[in-house]
Image (cartoon, rainbow, N blue to C red):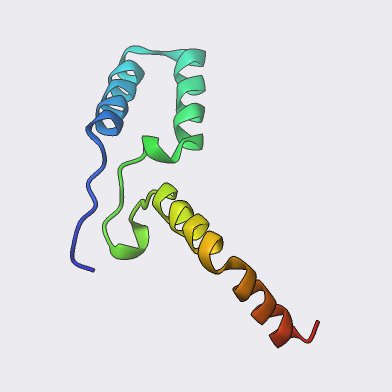
Length: 85
């Protein structure tokens, strides 16, 4: 829980570039970029704490696929048995 998940350097660099671009814009272009940044969760700085960490989804999806490949049918049948179906 005390470990820190570092963001990739590319994400940090992109956030830095967006902020630099934002400083040079005015009017409608600035508002458009602010709206885009508000819609993009990676445009905001990461918050501290375990509950706020940005965890990649891919590894969990890969683990789920492997589990399903080996145990899926048995788990599914057990679930149906528990549900009484």
